[in-house]
Image (tube, rainbow, N blue to C red; front, side, top):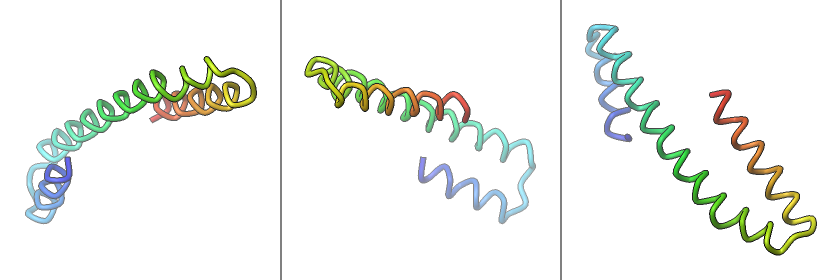
Length: 76
């Protein structure tokens, strides 16, 4: 993704066709969403499930944290 972002910056500097730049931006956004969903899945599978198994205030905090993260992803 880092290389793609540098490529987009170069395309802008070289005044490339706007639609081509937008296509690359869309590809980077998709890649970032994929990484975010993977991280969220890992967080739910490990941190949240462990906290829920233990119970108590930690479980409530981890669930609230996960819910807020999901809301941020949905809004983006």
